[in-house]
Length: 246
Image 1 (tube, rainbow, N blue to C red):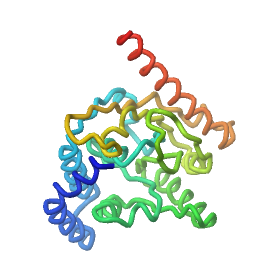
Image 2 (image 1 turned 120 degrees about the horizontal axis):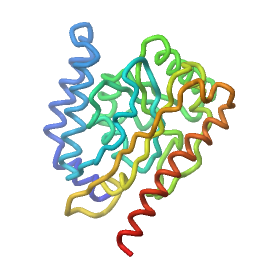
Image 3 (image 1 turned 180 degrees about the horizontal axis):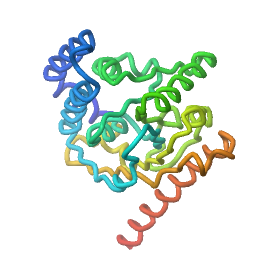
Image 4 (image 1 turned 30 degrees about the vertical axis):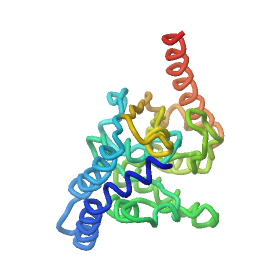
């Protein structure tokens, strides 16, 4: 976490200016469309990424659907995860985020601009309402969301945690493509005490799972399907690394 604290200190004044701009754009959203607001958030997260001396190698962008809404389900390793994905996106997307995590400096304003959905892990009814809202926005408005089914990160690094199948309620409502996203070495950017040196992470977009492939599955089965595909890809990449260094 030492690296993250250093990023906060180094970027505070520039981020403060961008936060005030974000507040203005949010108050006058009738003048600024979704793409404009997204690009401003992208400026914010890209600035943080560069201050953290982090780059991400992106693979599988050709797998992202080009029409209609969809949901990306990614593993969760730390504070850099959403920053990495949003920083390199060509098209707007939003996030599902835990409510307490969203109410911090700069994150709050970014979520507002993205029209993100804040979910309270301690209020089951509110969770259902949020997940239904997410699914309806993907289905009816063609929006794209990034969701972390693990819910939170710990010291798991490149190890998957339990996936919560409730997150997949949104996909069942939207009947949209589901895109598994594999994050590798993401924890090294802002969740380590390594202060010096550059960090390179990987963001891998796997082939989408169309509704026709999961319409007969339960939420738990879809959850396990997504988790297994992420795990298989992670095992393949990490296994290849071990082979190269052996």
